[in-house]
Image (cartoon, rainbow, N blue to C red; front, side, top):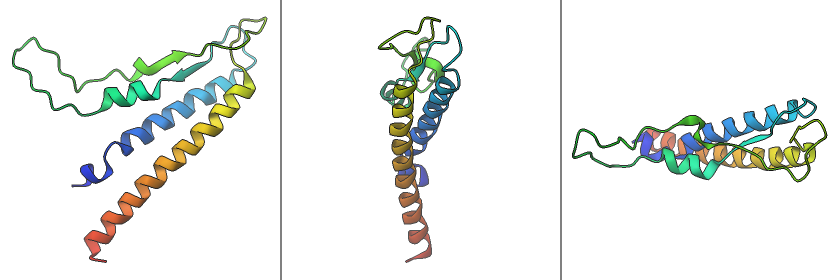
Length: 125
């Protein structure tokens, strides 16, 4: 019951957290020579983690439930590359971090509302 009520938001929150960690690494390495800025392809990761109700009819068929967590990690294409080979553009990274922080907070609020609804239903409110 709880899994259905929470839905994909639990996985989305974890992926958003992972994405913010990647951006934090980018910002922390803004002055590191030859560091390549990375980001997660959130849409691709979310699509890959959806629970598919596929049944295999042969022993050699692939199980679609397994996903590769590092699959969505991509290198960011910079507007300008620094002379030292670093591709981190600090204003871009900071803007993305702010955007992703808002998305993280939104997902967290959705989860809190759903959990609050479950608590009310259990208590009979």
